[in-house]
Length: 313
Image 1 (cartoon, rainbow, N blue to C red):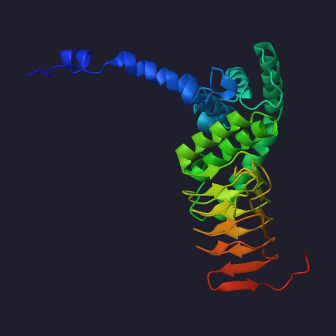
Image 2 (image 1 turned 45 degrees about the horizontal axis):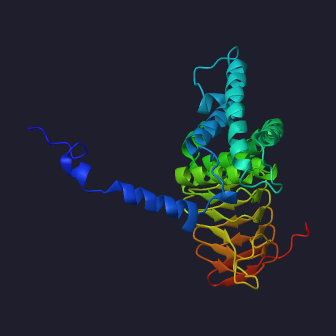
Image 3 (image 1 turned 180 degrees about the vertical axis):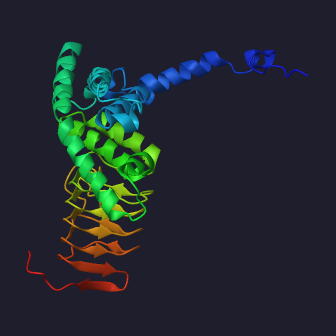
């Protein structure tokens, strides 16, 4: 027995009274509730295209893991070159689209936007070897820090924290080059894939390891040193949001934590405000921390214990 198509039925054709509805939405869009940037229609960056670009960049950085597993010594360089050419060409277009929404100067013509997009993409491409070096240090940190890790390949293919690091390192580079809108979109794609939310403005040193990862939040002005390890549901956030004389939130400002080298922060800990977690400290699970702690501290729900100085600082 066939089911009648509701879409093609007389009911669908007669009940919706679309003409006044479309007109009302146009009035809202164009006049009463317009949210268009500078009051203009522009192409937005395409999320699906950008997601593909990042996948291609990951494949260029780790060809046999994220690219083609049948590559040989003879074919790998050709694959990397071809993949980079495709990724960077598409990236430049997405950068162009995003620049309209973040440019300090009012760049009105597409030629100027295109030139700036090419400059940013060229600088980004030049930084890819350094980004890969940081990611390899993250790989080492994961392998050395997790007794369950059996190989680097397992970490690359199975660890959400590693995937989040790849997205963040790429997004952070674009953010620093001025493509902040695009970088934010990359971080949101990573968030949807991994459950880990890292603002692209966050500065994160090498040998960074997020174990398990789900629910980790790292704010825009966070600074993380070398050899830092976080567990799931850790928040490095802002404590308060000051307002101006008109009651609007003040943008910017260094409002997130500084985490120095060799710090471990366990599951569920929340660290808020521009506080400093001293080098070599351990922050226990479910701790709520809104003040700085000195180096080599051990902070638990029961209180703060400071280890004796080793004399190295």
